[in-house]
Length: 137
Image (cartoon, rainbow, N blue to C red; front, side, top):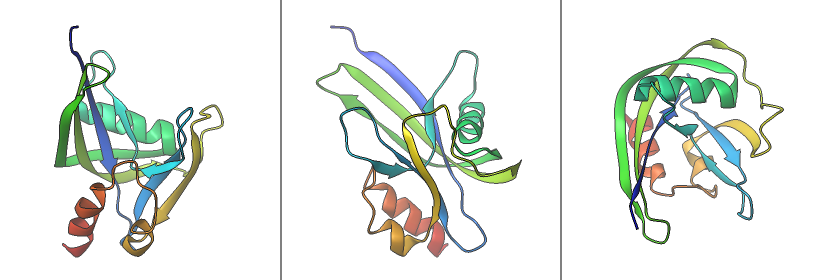
């Protein structure tokens, strides 16, 4: 079986109160989990463009992708898919925070403190360490 390669980008946005913008998503037949906005690359996009597009589609906010904060890669053994996800620090440049009406996967969008995030069901629990390092910085 040939390995499929998935590549994408995620955006980490921190507000003036040191809160991180998270999205509560529920994939079919899974429990709801919180994560930063993330998506796979579309044809012709750079990772930065992917991050900016997804952030706006999911949150209504326009952002500018900055430095790469983290890279998550690996593979799903049972699906023959490798993944390569780049996390960018993003700065809000405009827009208005809204939950998209046509995206049935998104249940909520909220600014969360590190204390709150520590008590949430995260899609990627090890993201908490990244978030803590950014707030402490």
